[in-house]
Length: 114
Image (tube, rainbow, N blue to C red; front, side, top):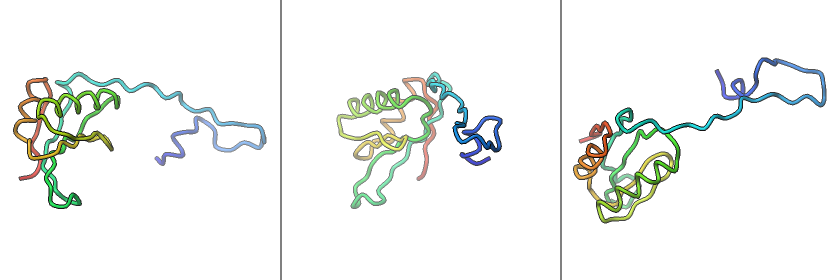
């Protein structure tokens, strides 16, 4: 089903020029508990001038919670990073340390890549 069809509820066509489609009210997505989240941790250096970054992917939930997790990881590793496009980027190769931190926080963690 295309995205366009999801926005319209029970109306195919209307001849009324003042008609507006009813849309489903967007429910606030709640962040599941850490034990129900499966995160993937990998090392990436593509399009980064050969510099390594540690990527954390697979987070489901509110963006504020993702930013809070990113802030925790950056402070524990003592490096910079960012949260964008639903993933956390930590500067440098901290895959093992980040995996330990996430496991202590209660997340399910898998290593991705080599």
